[in-house]
Length: 513
Image (cartoon, rainbow, N blue to C red):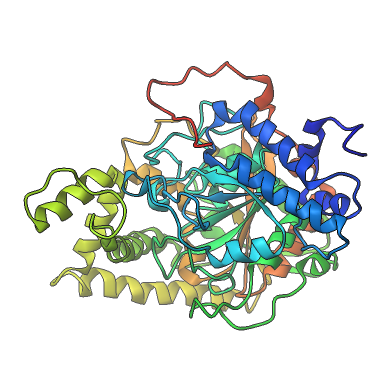
């Protein structure tokens, strides 16, 4: 296939690994690939609203630079010419970074996040910043101050959150790869609801430098992709030691693309009884149990296990995460950068009005929860106790991983719900992350892959949890599961339903160009 005899849209059906191989072989140019994805964004994102900003001109410049290096016979990186969408809480030098919040709507980054610098060196093309729940606080991407992202499989439904824009962009093939951040499931849950692969690496595997913090002991950056090979390719690039982040572990990064080829026969898989609950959607339960049978067919052994402190995870998370958010977001005060109220009479009023007008309702709710938990007289009763229970949760996993190699669970208890269905009930919204939160509390790697659809044609996700720094085992199991199923190959029919959605007034804004 060459630039002259291929249709532009055909590029967007290739995997990232295929794009890399064909660009290196000079079967087509990086510029042609980037133009095809930009065309697809222009065609589809008026419906989906995955992107807050599309870097059209800069992306083409990056792609042309890759082509020029290849023409000169120079060595190019492992992601040369591959478009990557980036969650809008990761700093890209010279670009807006809003966290989908009014308080940062005009902020321009002055430096690159470490993962962005690594992607630059690998030759990746940054195609745009994607939408998220404001400051990554949410499970549906409805908390964005900029727009509501829609699920490509059903435009009346949410894509999950908080990394909903990245998940929707990859699902709709508007980008072959994307970056997200995961604090309590913000990569894995939207990946499940959009039928793509989403991976939260071990805490300390990937640098958080240049990620605008939500909860620093929980946040982790990770990849979205359409398959395990692509996820492995992206993770290999962004993982590794960083002098700018003291929490990153200094240990070798495996070649994940080699590791995934190894056999999975004999792997021990555990099914935690606490994750197969009565309130779970019956079709989700059925799809996950069928997926477990597929795993057994690959030669893995399956046994029931118990994680007894699972019931405490939600309460622990919603004490610790808001507490850390309360501290991290205190820097947004209207003085140094970001939104500043136009009317204030003194310094205290400047703080109060800037934060009151700049932050959305969910962010305010979590700041108040966290401030309360950290306040005098309540610290020991809430925050200190939550930290102790967090230790018990991690000990549960330590004991179980003496018996099994991988824990398999549903990623989300339900398929994607309707836009607006849970916005009036924060507790119901928080329950959307009930299966993903424990992974962050324990600092484990967690991966979600597609494993089926409901009768309404809504995606279902399967979650793998592993021991710290054993990401290659999760990717290997995902890769072999993909060999015997085709869920990851299915593409949403969003391009055939253009114009069918009637947006509520004020629900979306056009992305910056």
